[in-house]
Image (tube, rainbow, N blue to C red; front, side, top):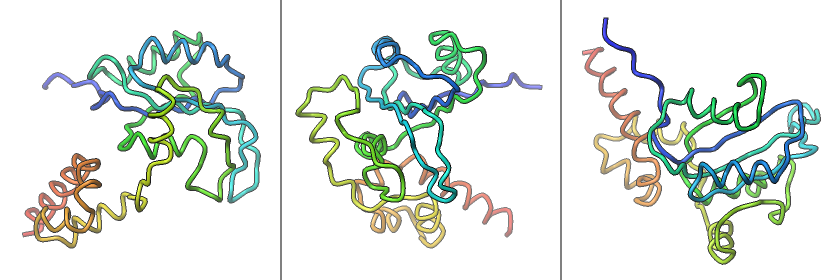
Length: 194
């Protein structure tokens, strides 16, 4: 049997959500971000209400940032968080890739999601020059790109050029890796059916 490759963060660009049954020090979060990230922004979400059930969501933290170091096993990334904050376990820690820093910043406050609890932009803690932050936060992110839209674009196109035309070159650049993953999966399935 071949050696198992550890699951890695395929990019340095990550969203981290920390849901623990405890309030974290914002100073400690800032210290963590300064140690591990080049650029970052984070926010504490208090009193969020689940749109469909109207339940109050316990306090949690959203962090968006670019890791200073490249590919690292995901388990190592999670262990860094566990050790830094002295958590007992990794339960409640979620790490995923982000595709657009602008839309990730806007998600911190739920700017484009009126059904969710709105937060103040002033509550975002970041290490960007103020002018850069304002430009990024207020950027027009265009249409929301969902997985379904990417999948449908790939499914209905005869070639990637058609996908680019449908999504726009800017969105294609942001989602290029996902588009190619979907495209290759669809083509493998097509070959298998033949």
